[in-house]
Image 1 (cartoon, rainbow, N blue to C red):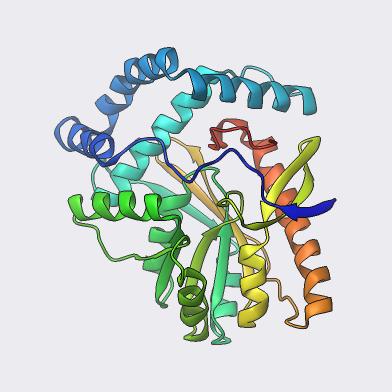
Image 2 (spheres, helix red, strand yellow):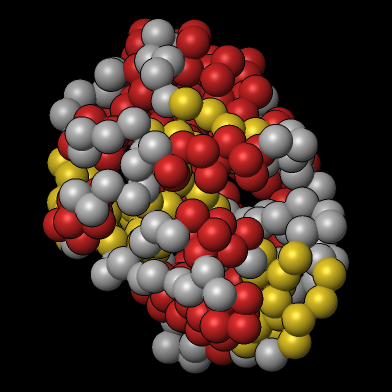
Length: 299
């Protein structure tokens, strides 16, 4: 393991736009989830043919998956992009209350309730696997606490605009690339609130650690874990995975506490970050088509 300044090919820009999400929403509203699911095939076929960068990155990622775990078969870049399309449709359904009933299972939700009962705030750290954006919205309905989501500015703008169009505003968004982004997160935590963050992407200049991940070194940001240590609050790793048609499984792990003392904090952050990377790797092994980082993650 080595520690160094961030070097990554992700620019902070998110593929897709408000218009694209709005078209999904209208299609669902007029035709329903079933028909929209069939329409998804030619849409993804077009995207697969002409989005060369995403197709090639998907192929490279899946080649790594197959090489690292020989038992995985039957996955390809078209299925990978189709999986992402189904996630987008489900997200549109859940945000706009269309598409019929969905089923949810919750594992480890008690960890979140117990951590919040201590009144010290809570960081939920997830990754770009499964339906990460809806996880926060669903938890907000089940946990009696103020809820914020920390994202880069481009994602905040896109999601806020979409939520307004679907009349489902209400999540508090914190922009990570604002000068006072970290201060806003710390303030929310010290008020005893929940802050949801991603632990698998970062902006240029962020402090990272390169860790073993699927057979090679990849950079992971320290940010969520450093903030948990500074705020004196617990941090919980969680995922929201598509378990089947209209079925999502939410999983949360036991909370971790990191020391605020500089020397011990460095050790705690290293250990917690490695454990986080191992948990993400386990999820990717179980659900290889639900990994949605369409850039060279190991750059």
